[in-house]
Image (cartoon, rainbow, N blue to C red; front, side, top):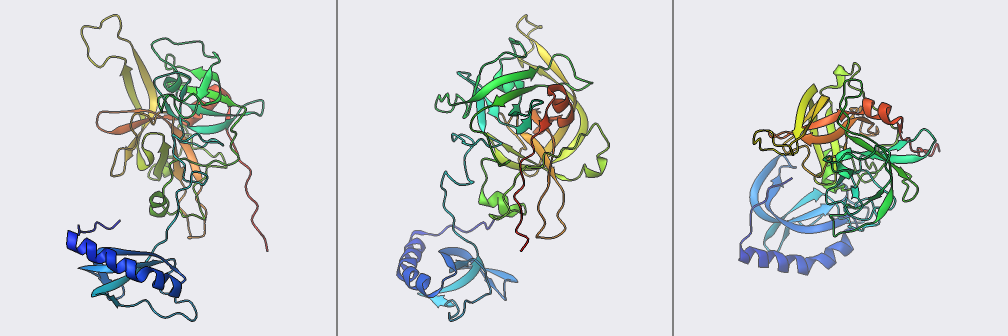
Length: 371
């Protein structure tokens, strides 16, 4: 994204007057013009060179193509040179794809903010699963729904709300807790901190994510016609041999930090969590859990996850061969926490699904027009 220069007051006034005077006329004469703005930089020599110069910028859906019967954009307006760039304007309706994790999501989306009813903590709706009776549910971390200082019964039933109760004290129920695995005894060598929630309403028909932005789409090979979806339910269980994919980029959508990109750094990290970070001679109130055989992810340019992202699923993508190919997501695990040096700890997805006796949900694929 362009890091533009700041305009002084006089330049702001000139730009505003210029755009006000020309916009109606230019939109009428140029049907593919979508934005008229200003910039502190202008491209020259067919985009090969960028010069520092205040200019008026025309953004159109397809640069370089002049609709039949139209003329070229003016090269100079009110003493400003002009620049033509590709770009478009889009609205922010809450009934479209661009929904926040803290909106009441109906149908539900991955990355949504969730918690137990009246529970002051919360986290992220991870992903949708198929129960062994064919019903649909979703998974998240157990510590998102429970106070781990008092481990309740694994099959205790209670309401789960979306968005989380901490968001304006809402208690909009999305369904009932079904089963949890607590981080007390490892499952086949891997510590699990996971809960299963059964759904009977707000059921999704697609594997969509909340907190999308157009910047996320464009910077990572997506667009409005190719919205990220996790529909096929494919996984990579790093207990098996997937080392050829260790360098593939990782992605997650969390209720706190939304979309982030990173990389799988280590397979097999072990961490210990204390309820009290200060050791005062092991007081009776201090207890801990050890997380064995976890994955470690490192963010690209920023933290991969922060508090509030617990429960978010982590995915890898197959590289696409052509621009017309569709991205294919593979779930590799669920975020459970992070380290003081900004790395993220992820529980492998294989043991989670085995322990809960579920499969990642497969959504029906839209049929392509063969004509």
